[in-house]
Amino acid sequence: MEQLQKLIDTHDRIVFFGGAGVSCESGIPDYRSRDGIYNRGYTLPPETLLSHTYFMRHTDGFYRFYRDVMLHPDAKPNAAHLKLAELEKAGKLVSVVTQNIDGLHQKAGSCRVHELHGSVHRNACMSCGNFYDLDFILQGEGIPKCTCGGTVKPDVVLYEESLDDDTVMQAIEDIRSADMLIIGGTSLNVYPAAGLLTYFRGDALVVINLQPTNMDKNATLVIDRPIGEVFSKIRV
Image 1 (cartoon, rainbow, N blue to C red):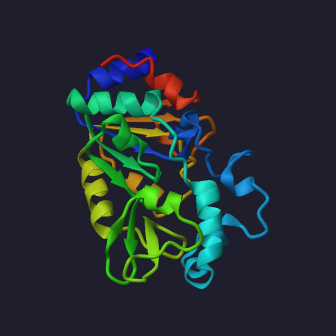
Image 2: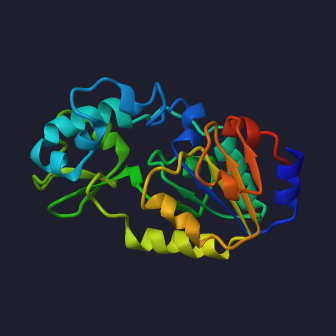
Image 3: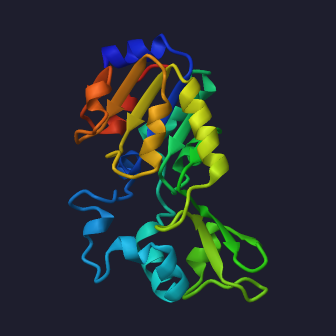
């Protein structure tokens, strides 16, 4: 913690790159751990249930899985989310680059958040583009329909879909200009998101994750503790 605090104190363009582990302490399960979403025992693998093809061909089945597993409206920001927002407000943190779709960084007060995989809070009609919030999806049953009759689709990146170009470019710009990069709560096994880390040119790389990652060997500091626990001890 002393090393981490010193690095934060001596850097002023910090970027945070996070994954599902950031939200675990808010009660949202991750994907690949023993108790994660990918080990829930569904007949079809999540890669199929959350694919573009499955959404288009079996929209009702997609929404059964999506409402059952992917939506956590009562989740609250944990110490990591709150400290990141505090660091941004203090002018130390440039932005958050997240693979999460839960919106907890914004709920904690972060303003510059690059959501690589979209957000459950944004939904749009595939026919007319009309916008719908998360409550609309939660309160309905079956396939959510727009007033025009079109199917409403979540603004989340499904398997077989590409990341949003503008979001990716903004994330790359921030990572490239950062003097410190903190990676937290991610296995770094999901591409192309993890590939954005190759643009980092700063002098301080910190990895905070319970399991080893492929970036540990390049890191200035590696901490294998729960990320909320670590961030709760940071002084701003």
